[in-house]
Every structure is written in C-alpha cells, then in structure tokens.
Image 1: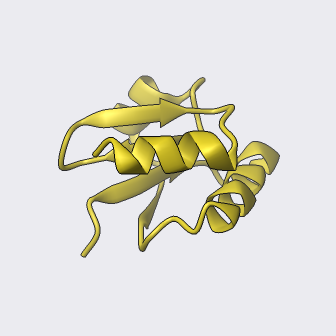
Image 2: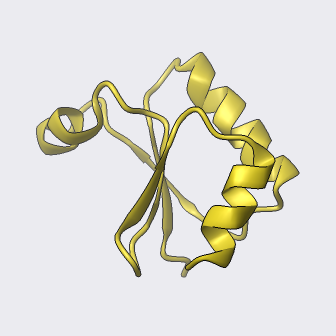
Length: 77
C-alpha cells in the first residue's frame, strides 16, 4: 500500500482537477480520503483541500499544484 493520500471533498471541482494533474504526473498508487464526515480532518484540511500527503515523511503538497510540482514532491520523498 502506498503512503500517499489525497485529502478531498465530495463535489469538489478543485479535487477533480487535482486528480487529473496527478494522472498527468503519473502519481503512483494513492488513497483518497474524503474529509466531509470527519470533524478532525475537516478542521485540519477544510480550507486547504485538495492536499496530497506523504504519510511516510509527513510532507504535504497543498493545491494549487501542477504535474511538475507533483513530480518534484514525489522525488523528494
């Protein structure tokens, strides 16, 4: 299982854009985590989603990001 998580919301057009960018960057397998029904995640990520997190290192990449930024983020892990 990958240590990557994309925090997102239901019905979030920015999250849809982030998924497209991650596909363009050929991001390896990741988990999608919806924050809508999780108060702790809502408090942490509510205004920041989408956020790509590397659970292994604790690093996070906040939106907006492009494919180049995702590749740099992944290579720095």
